[in-house]
Image 1 (tube, rainbow, N blue to C red):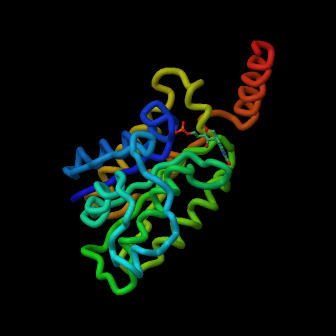
Image 2 (spheres, rainbow, N blue to C red):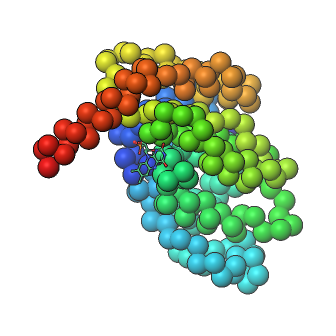
Length: 224
Ligand SMILES: Cc1cc2nc3c(=O)[nH]c(=O)nc-3n(C[C@H](O)[C@H](O)[C@H](O)COP(=O)(O)O)c2cc1C
């Protein structure tokens, strides 16, 4: 099984999103999947120029010579696509949206997909509420309403800034759940609700989280 994962966080492996994404991908590797991970920050990918030449001049081809050319065959061959992103102003990060838009040559009407792909979203956000992910989930569901793809699940980490305050080992269960979710996806094609819930579980009380945030801003103001 081939897995193509794209992480749109500028913080790459040091970010909150990666704290869930990386064990999830490790779980897939454990179960035998061939996983490739790319960080948008390391890729040279321009925005779509909107001329639709990939449909009406050279169907299936993008004229821009950048890292998308290397990614196109990987998108075509993948059995599973993992989109990873922090929530930025209620959406995916800008570089990730550029990359998503540049998939247009793969979606020329009349093209028959090589395989029915499964899609997973991994996302983290600063907000406490799970509702902060709703716009991105709605976008995923809209994109993958096509018959040749299936939006399988979303691994969501709300209140993600709490992670840096967690004592060593205090969220091992969350990391383990992400890893188990990867294994389960490869073995069964599904991710169970209990694992998704474990990934999103509150890390502290909402009051404590708000207090930590206020304190951090107060200290930064004092230091500035
Ligand atoms: C430019 C910017 C916009 C953000 N917008 C939101 C937002 O709309 N909702 C939210 O809950 N968090 C928002 N956040 C917080 C991030 O989603 C959160 O810190 C996330 O865990 C960062 O992930 P990363 O460390 O992988 O980059 C924003 C952060 C930045 C830098």
